[in-house]
Amino acid sequence: MYSEKDIASFVYKEPLLDKIIGLKPVTWINPNRKTMLEMPDFSISMKDILESEGLWERFAPFFMEAFPETKNTQGILESPLKEISSMRNFLNKQNPKIEGRLFLKCDNKLPIAGSIKARGGFFEVLSHAEKLALKAGLLKDDYRAFTSSEFKEFFNKHKIGVGSTGNLGLSIGIISAAIGFQVTVYMSADAKPWKKDLLREKGVRVVEFSGDFSEAILAGREQTKKDPTAYFVDDENSNDLFLGYSVGALRIARQLEADNIQVDAQHPLFVYSPCGVGGSPGGTAFGLKQIYGDHVHCFFVEPTHSPAVLVGLLTGENSKISVQDFGIDNKTEADGLAVGRPSSFATSISSHLISGLYTMEDQTLYNLLTQLMDTENVFLEPSATAGLIGPHRVLSTDYAKINNLNMKNATHIVWATGGNLVPEIERKEFYERGLATVGNK
Ligand SMILES: *Cc1c(COP(=O)(O)O)cnc(C)c1O
Image (cartoon, rainbow, N blue to C red):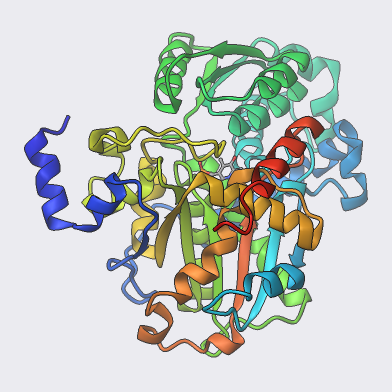
């Protein structure tokens, strides 16, 4: 716990905290970012990312069998990288203007889970399932066996637990149920009713909490740990989630190559990722850094009401400190970002490699959602739109100048992290909410 004096001393040392506490949108450039030469050794490396990709390949036949919608990609779950020139033109009605190209990484279109959680969440559950099946001597070469009744019976004796604000619960719930696990999702108070309904339909046990994400995780962790046959997916400290996300970097690199887009000293790459506990943006940033080194510039985005990673990094306290310690309420409409405390594993790595982080208000998320629908006819959930103002925010700082970057040749990628499972009624509501204030900004 932190005393009032501790908090005052953090604010004294880091005046930006004053604005953050006042819920003002801020843009922070990371003074601790290391070049690749200075980068410390981490507990994971490129080798781990490549091995993680191997797991997806082994499970591809399972996906084709269990989820026929993955047949035309041979059981590989991937999303398009889409150039959004109309949105770029729209954004360029304001200064400073984006000179390079603007892309959307459409993880809203990831099969089955419709969000970036299909990367991390599926990976961790499949990796656990594979270990159990190998240990039991059940698994031979053919991973289609994971759809057999023999496997289902086996996995039905094992349990999975997870704490979630929604999307992680959806992804873990759906894949665990498909494998046959008994799965319990501990949902925070802000989780949407349709997400709980959808999970229950799939046979997932949903436990609701009146508290926020950290409380849901805490309760879930305690309940799950009591049972030796149970495994807890711990979003506040997970190596496997991180690795699952990191594979996204390999895939995006191949997509850029296929589109003949260069990334080098003369062609900088900027990536803007919505951030909750910091696992998905951290994992993908870690992978991108392994591939592109100093030529990739990764920025995270958080809601003004939930700047968990920013507060952790600014104070250097990482996951020890929460937004509530600063009197910030962690109340945001941005599902998946309503997080008061960052992941300790992810944050310890990201602290060295991210270029910066900015915060924004919920209403701006809705405005962007509406504008993206109008210009590109792409629907995203509110959280997933957060990266769209990234270029503008970064160009408003002296980051490009200080780092001597050729912005005319820049490629900007906005990581769209979710949206496909959102029901039609909610889509309309979100759109209307943005429409109501677009133009009044
Ligand atoms: C979970 C989530 C994020 C953030 O991922 P973290 O690993 O929590 O940082 C971003 N966008 C959406 C839509 C999410 O569900």
